[in-house]
Length: 86
Image (cartoon, rainbow, N blue to C red; front, side, top):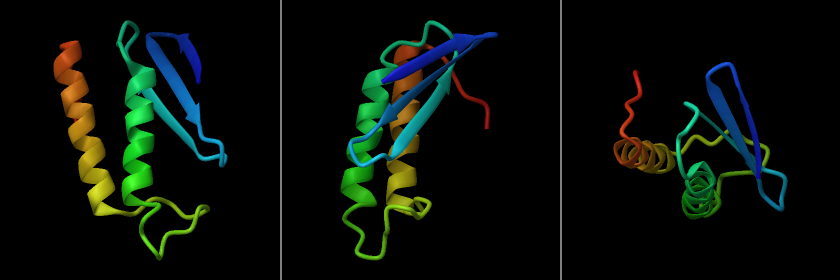
């Protein structure tokens, strides 16, 4: 897990053993970024990796994964008291 902070933004990166990287940006003071990234990895494992047509070097284009990540981020925003503009 790597975290960089500067100019009003925090960037956190989680790299899997297979080399896949998940990156999240947030406002400074946002809690549990490492936990959120680990949950995104679980969703990735459950959605993308179980798709027989998905290959590791392909972009993740799975509606189930996208919906699950959106839901995870919304829950995290509620628990941190922030909101994201779309």
